[in-house]
Length: 127
Length: 110
Image 1 (cartoon, each protein chain N blue to C red):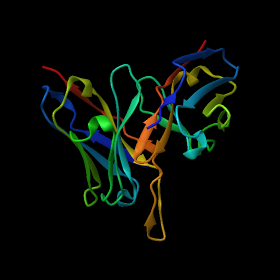
Image 2: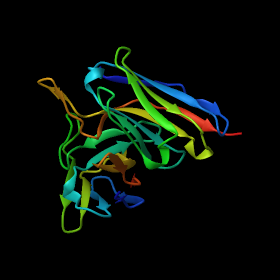
Image 3: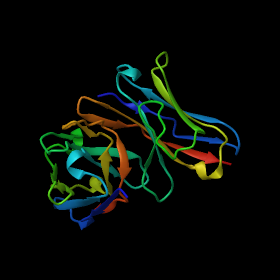
Image 4: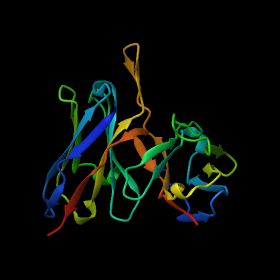
């Protein structure tokens, strides 16, 4: 079945860095756009970033631009989120999610919504 | 960028019908599809409605989505409420490289 498993979360000091990973299985990873979405404690969902199926296009939420980098390794079926200059307000559960787009006839489409979510990994930024 | 505004919370009795609104702050609600996600306590979100009014397989037809251009809003309607419907519900849309979530609505079934 389709599965997304995040890892790499932990406790980090303000100003520090962390790299999250998301291992994908059960679908053609190289044909799917992917998202990171986060949820701070007791708050709602906040979209973080998107990467196109082939890694050629990246989009970021304004508050994450310049600090976070989304990337992927299609040979390893793995999505990444490099987070630098971390702040206390980056404390959250980070979810990896599959874009609902599809590939057909050699062309892949992104739909910019999420049809499968991982269980999340927790990032805590504290001194 | 536009915002999507949802009521913070709603409550209704089992068996009744509840509607959760999602109002777009600027631009037309029908410019981009609206999705709805359900997040039960302690769980990841799951998609409930996509492309305004489409249900993924496995989602009961008690859940329905619609858009209303006159109020520039989308709505999620849940009929025949059950206690297991208690959850947070989020609307979501997209525009020009930005994915936008509403603030979420906590549904209490009492």
